[in-house]
Length: 574
Image (cartoon, rainbow, N blue to C red):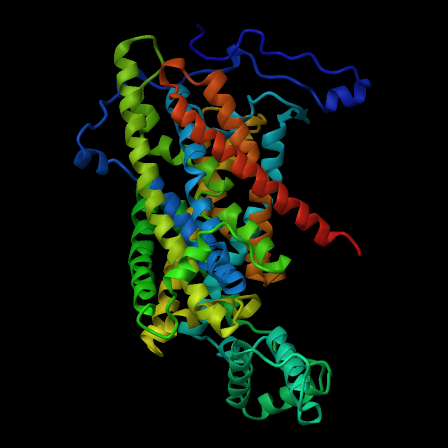
């Protein structure tokens, strides 16, 4: 057996094509000699054995949990609950659980070989586009949309700060009005139930009637502005003033100013920060708000917003909601919630920085190395499953809040009203204090995502530079460390620029979710390839684990295929 675990006949002959195409698409796999285990024997350490000692060494999974709670859980999961109701609870929970086996397979390979994720993915057999592996090539597209997603996150933090600490107050004033979609829906319902149509063919349901009354109440609170909006909406005219400026979504500056200030502060923090700072800061921000959210869900069960046991069972019955919009949102959510594609790739980087691979030492045929590798992988399993429990509880809590409050009130978080709408899910329990409670909490979880994701993306981009030969391929070299530092500093500023030019947080996050969903089955395939062909045979799991890994990959493939197909259909001209 070769210690590298890579077959000797690793180069696959290209198909008979024209030379230009053959140069562009090359079926190849790097040879054994291209792999170098740079771990140092003097840095090995025995793994902890007792549960208490193991818990002291977890951390990378908690960083990942802090990353995903902000975008996937807080925004997309709550939005899915608001759109679909209880019907997709099963899909949300499935999205959290199935990916952990792929996550751990990447982690197992990092312990086996001590190699970073993109360098590993670049070895997977398949077409090579301009010299890089097909999976890595798609990663370039995904990281671009993920950077745009972080622009949406920066906007979300800017919105929460604009409502908490307004600078000019223009944003808070603008979002006090219902959205254009809500107003148009209200006008359509009012028309069908007007006095001239005393017996409408489709009378309003109790839920629709509540929505109409809520929108009318909110418009009345706006005074003259609200009256003007009502008149224009009922007349079917554009909701603009005499100067052509939107009465519903006027240009605002507060959230953009806060997004810029936040990005600058994050750049400074990441310039000086290292692994420990990211771990402690991100986890502390998320834990408190997640606990409050879970408590809020339990408290809602004592109010008129409570869900019955029959409704919970309905949500677990593998049913689908009516209409495509909710399902598209759910599939985009599936790509982000739990461990998304970005987190699957970045997880081994944090494990390497934590020291799991370094403490295992360079691979050798001795029994001592095998014991260390198995021990540190056991620590990694504790880390991954502990974080899975945390983000699954958070995901379920955010989804049920969206179902209980936002769905029943006919609210849909979107655009510049995203944060304000999400905060409504806390009002039934905490009253008007909910505004402050949620805004502080939203800042905590959204900023933790912004911080951790930028730090993780910087490590991946720096690794990509090593893969294509623009930087050192040694992930612990001084050149690589400085490159990570510079990219960490620049990325938050790029995210702020994205938000300034496209201030639609939910759309940015949804686009990123779809590209991540498309990449998930590729990562599942890569995990199976590592498991069967590359990872040290002594570390390979048993049949039960293989079955779970296979089920995970199939689930990722089905969700990605459906989501990408529906998104493509929606984008095509009709």
